[in-house]
Length: 281
Length: 212
Image (cartoon, rainbow over all chains, first blue to last red; front, side, top):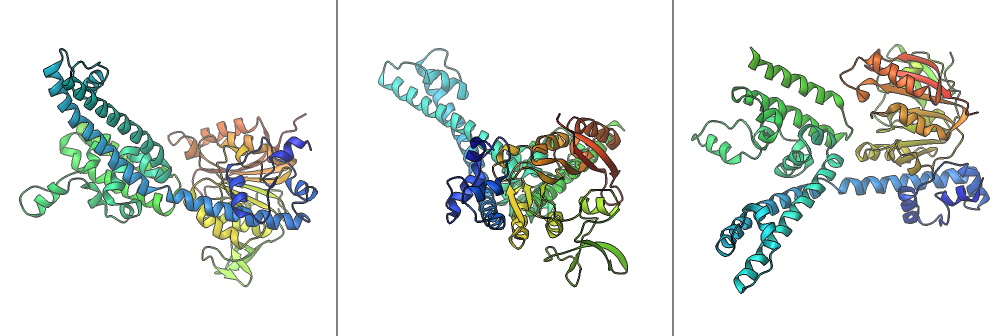
């Protein structure tokens, strides 16, 4: 074996009594190709013999994997909950402030645009007066907030599939994150009945209904899902009910098992095809 | 065909079922030191139950891709030698760690089977058996990339899941494509549908193609 391959061995430079270092190299190390690691470990004096090597390997891999699992599970639904809420807050605030900027800038400049893109143009200007300086400065904050919202969205889209693979595939990462945030966590969402998930985000309408003042809401935030929004109005209740049922199953699989299952996605597609076929009758 | 040493048929509820000797892990029925290896929960168990010639004799060194919660791999570790278990999803890997904790020859790794360079510094070369049960698109590619861990006369024991490649196509057509791609790196020795135990799965026994 070449020296190069020994360089890559997980036990190279490792003190057998240092589990943290072992964990780090097992998790983050790499090699272009495998080699006869047990023999090399004995040659290098890392282990007394092959049996000793396997004992060390067992303890190191069990510990490394246990720690890695713990960490991955913690980088998790709570982070997703905070980030989606922060995304919505920054989005909303950026839009509100952009209106203020548009109103103000319209009084100072010709051809001032509206919305966040208008604020972007204002932020590029060179102010001449004190008032202009203030509005340009405010526009800069709007741009920063809008950019932060974009970054937060990218984070949500990256994190949601790792936290809840089935839910993210079914609902898309952003809606998946919203449902988790509304429920308070993935475990909480997994424990909800599907009728609750169907109206998550429509609490005002639901309580108005319970108080006898309104009809029951057909859907909450799941309205943003293509299967609800793009189903004709008279079938939307059925579509929302079917979707909510499968979303809860997806959340349960994600929380209790964690593997991606094609079957539930196929079942939902079939059910939706049936519901939408009613429009052709 | 003969079962590997350490795997026996034992009577459970009046039926002869596969069993291995080891610490129970998921509440499976036991008979003295033997515990039931349920072919309905294990694709490799089904492969043995259906009588495919896996070439397993017991005591092999094994790389197991797609170990999930460790149900099957716990039985493998009961009759095999050093057993490396790769699983990508954290939640099942948590259970896998618990299974490995009491089995000194089982080495769990939280890794992506599509990226062997991320575990080649831990998993040794010249292994006897590569067991593959990954529910991902590109199953033939996974087998090809992990060929490097196998000795030249080693065995690939794969359970190919048709739905992971394409849910809409006919499973037979999917299997044809996967086997076609597998033939670039492996010589297929035997295949069998596992439908009696697992819908739309194909068991494959193969050995690496000689590189010269």
